[in-house]
Length: 308
Image (tube, rainbow, N blue to C red; front, side, top):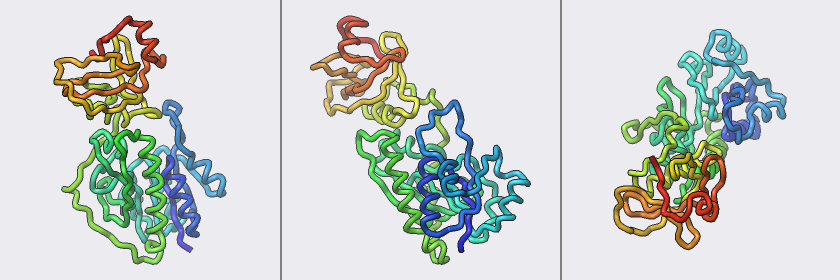
């Protein structure tokens, strides 16, 4: 029987762990994270899933310490798998598994190596992303590719909607590739890193709207950081506001030196700097959801100042 040690977190971790079990892999140990109380936990629990299957589970602060390395060596795994585990694994750890250490990444490598690839793909207006199973090396997301599955990004998809697609893509990718991995016949496709790029993580402050950008760029930011992420933020009439959903309206009304929020046919519209119009579908001001009617009651008839 093939034995594995699994590093996993998030939806992808749960679904890929279940794929291994469905294929008869002996998962000797699951290594996951303790949930951060400061983070909104909107995804499934790997620890709970492992407990359902009576799989030993640990949550070390650092999996690369000598004690943890020895713990994993003693289990003699054939493979190591990383499914949305958030810490880098050292070459010494990766070398423990004689048949390889593999990671599931949420993009079509070599594009969008690094952190939060789904969010970055939406921000850049991509129409496609996916999941990639690849061997791990010292450089992040740079090892040989075993398999990929693409998914579409529709024009109004939010990050959570795309992440759900990528989760399914990850499950399908592993399910299709695992028999060949176990048999030792899986392909190894060398990545051309020059055809992609590396992106770092994002902070809530990165959700600030720059109203000098085009309506399309602002729309992409809004959907990339929409809840359960922190949301895109700005000001309306100098009060703190979050714009949680938008729709791009393909109308060229002429370029404007400053954006303008107005009401038309009971729709909140922003005439953006590039002349395109953005409909605000969900607006929050000072923590309160705002309808067009309540906006008028609060600030009088528009148009209203938006942005710093």
